[in-house]
Image: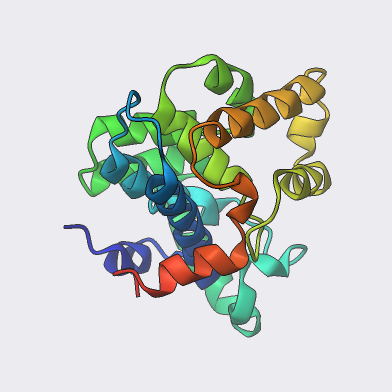
Length: 214
């Protein structure tokens, strides 16, 4: 069994990013608990493992000065985290996707999980919607419900993307990507035995607090 705390320590993952990945894991766990379509088989362990590893390389691209929320309670230790970031960039490069892939391969993660993580991107939302790969849909959607410091609605996350990610908002197909995200949500919602609105900070915090992640 992977020791995620040791992995996070090895790669210099800030506490707030650890919490983000735990929330994504929590959302997928919630969906697993309420999945009611027996005709669709999901490898839940695979997608939950992907959730806990999907942003390992993000530390190389964080702008800690203009976005202190990335550090959460560690904002007072800015110098330390900038040094950690420098070391990670020197070892894994500036591209967060490439850094994540290199980290995953370094710790021996299976290629199937690397592929799911590599495909998870707002920019891939249209192909994810059209795909029959439910692991990709679940990881993408869970990430889309996770704001920098809490679980939010899909609309709140889209607002967040507009504020922080001009590489997407400047794309001519931005509204098509937004539509695809909403359709992914509808696809998942149609397979649950509770309203998808029950995914919120309180419900997910309860799942995380009673899990083996702590």
